[in-house]
Image 1 (cartoon, rainbow, N blue to C red):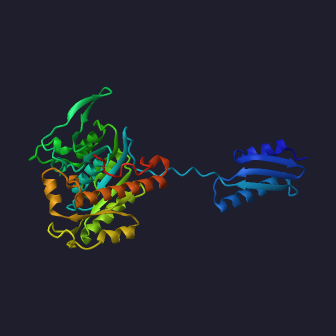
Image 2 (image 1 turned 90 degrees about the vertical axis):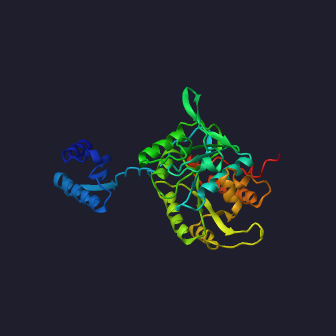
Image 3 (image 1 turned 30 degrees about the vertical axis):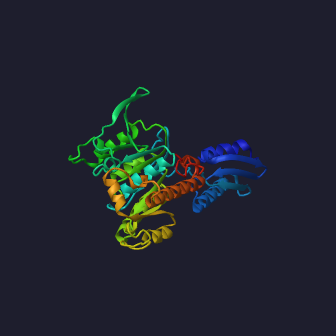
Length: 369
C-alpha cells in the first residue's frame, strides 16, 4: 500500500524534495505541488516526464501521478540606476539653465530670470556653474567681492554674495579677473560641489544653476550632487544652435538622468530697434525654437528679443529685467510665469519623490511698492 511516508522518502531519494511545496496520497493517486528550476516551458516538461517515469519505475504503472508544476519566482527588477543627488535643506526647487551651444545668451537669461523671480517675491539663489567662463559677477555687479565664512550648526560655510535680492556664488569670486582656471574635470567638479554643499544658502524657493555649454563633467556633477527639479533650455532660432539643443535635451531625457525639461527659451528671437519698437527683424531665423519645441513636446517659455539695452545692462551689472515698466521686464515676467506654470504641471505628473514644491501661482506678479 502506498503511504505518504514512502512518497516522502522517495522524493528525498531522487533529490527533488526541495522543489516540493505540498503533496498528498489518496490510494493510488499522488498529488504533488512543486516548483521547477527554470521558468522555461521545456524545462517544466522535462521535469514532468522524469517524475512520472521515476514513480512508475518505483511504485508501478498503476500509480496515477498528478503534478502541478509552478514557475520559479523571478527576482524583482532592480530600480533604474538614476543619477540623483541628495536634497539641500531649505531649497525647494533647483532649476538647471542649460544650452547645447555656447554664445546663445544663457547666462544673460539666467541672471535676468533670477532678478525677475526675486522681484516677484520669491527667495532666489543663482549658482554660476561655468567654472571656466564665469560671468555672474559681472552681470550682477558683484565683481571683486569675496564670500565670507560663517558658522552654521558647528560648520564653517561660505556666505553667498547678495545683490538685487539674489544670493549667488561663482568661481569668479575666488579667482582673479585675469586669472585663468586651468583645471581638469574632477577638480572643477569638486570646486562646484563645494559651492553647492558648503554654502549657507538658507531658505530658497529657487536655486538657478547656470550650466556651461555642452553635456560634460560639470553637468553630470550637478546631477549627481543635487536633485534637479527641472531644466530650462536656452537657444537662438538659428539652425546650428537648435541642433545642439536637441543633444542637450536628449541628455536630460536619458533613462539614468530623467530630469524633466520645463521648456525652451528662445533668446535673440528677433531684433527690435529702439526707435522702431513695433518692428521685428528675424536676424537668426524665425520661430526655430517653437518648431523644435512642438516636435519634442515641450513648451516655449518665452521669446527674448535682441535689443541693445540687454547687452548694455549686462555689461554694467544691472540686468535689463530690473528696468521698471519696460518691454524687456514684461517679457521676463511672462517667461518666469510660464516657467512656474510648467513647474506646477510637473508637480501633478511626477511621483512624490520628485515632486516640485510650488503648487499655486502665488507670487507671479511683481510686488507692489
